[in-house]
Length: 478
Ligand code: GLU
Image 1 (cartoon, protein in one colour):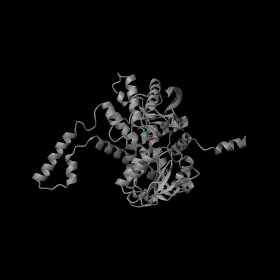
Image 2: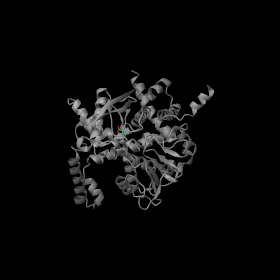
Image 3: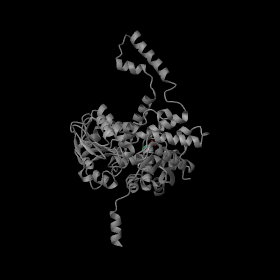
Image 4: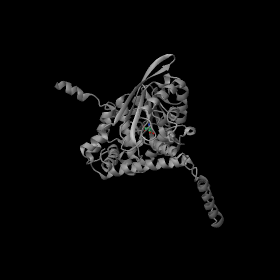
């Protein structure tokens, strides 16, 4: 019996358990009664569906889930993942992360997540459409898809296209729902989406790192100095999040992307890779192998251990585990993916004083802009539509006043910005930047003010859990 227990203890924690253990560290710091803590951590409901679809003359059964972690705020929000390895534990862990993420950056939503076991690359576009529409029917009919209560978005293996199919299926089911467009976010712009949503998570990663480097105290603790310019970055995964983050950081902030890790291996160039070139190469060749002018390493994962300033895991969970954590040489890890560092690895990194910017904060850009899209859909009007020309007119008046009457010559760049009214994408970026900057400041403040908090992840969960528990306490349990 004793030896059986021993073995059990050795079993690695599941993703869900790993997230819970991280939250427990925050709960230790906060004075929350155990009942409320349990209510916050538990997953409210999980729907599992199996449905048949006729594929190439044969019936195939697909299995999927939608986990509703919390509904202290509605709608509950979170992506739908299409991948071969999806399971209930993963979907529940990701739903929990959505709850904390939304609370952290003041997006007034609960947390949810969906997943379907499928290898999307094995199906044609038409087949994927059939499967997605059928999955949508299951979710809608069972109360797990609705603009007021549960609103999905893209995640790994899904994108604008799938969101458009979901929105269209929902509209056909409930045409009388005037807010049908708001049943899902991440849609194409011509189908009710918002400008700037596709790049939003990657852009959020950029804003998170910019804000981190505006705080010399924590930069120093991470063993660095100065700003982002010239910092050596390794990025794992050139999917939607990794691609945009790497592109913006290298093109706009002067970082050197010294390695890109992909499924097919890694490419390394100490002088900095051109992200756009690598991305195009992957699209053409389906691999990074033989990318011109760079070193290729087949065992891509080993490149996580290369020395660098910032390591950005941007693909899957559990990439840094207790096995490789002792060998990580990055000074800062920015978790663009959900759950890339396991609980056990996190403990090791903490001891090794490697600073980790946590997922619930770093990748919150996607849901922040989803929130804007949802509001746009409910208000049935594009942001900036009514005031853009008005702002332009005001700008013209300022310029005329200064140039003609006060004799001031306004530099061209300032002139242009005064003369142009903000359009939707400007407003989206401004709102996203504000949420990311404020998010970091709140985390950092808690980290600095409380000596029981020894890392940014715990600080982030303290901020999130405090807000959620307040909403439980204000409303009571019902
Ligand atoms: N799937 C994204 C995430 O993990 C976006 C969720 C959303 O926009 O609702 O945060």
